[in-house]
Image 1: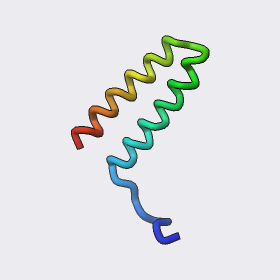
Image 2 (image 1 turned 180 degrees about the vertical axis):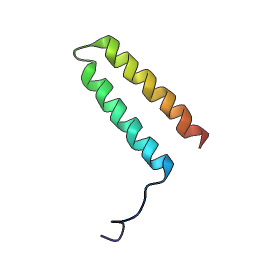
Image 3 (image 1 turned 90 degrees about the vertical axis):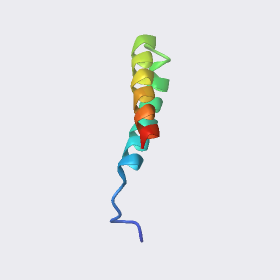
Length: 53
C-alpha cells in the first residue's frame, strides 16, 4: 500500500517489457520457431538498451 502511487523508473519499465518478451518467445517456441526467434531478437535488443542505462 505504501508504493501504490509510486512511478516506475524507465529501467523498471524496460525490464518488465523484457520479461514479457521472453515469456512470449517461450510460448511461441512450441508452435512457431520463426516468431519465437524474432521475439528473442527483440528481447536481446531491449537488454542491450537496459545495460546502457
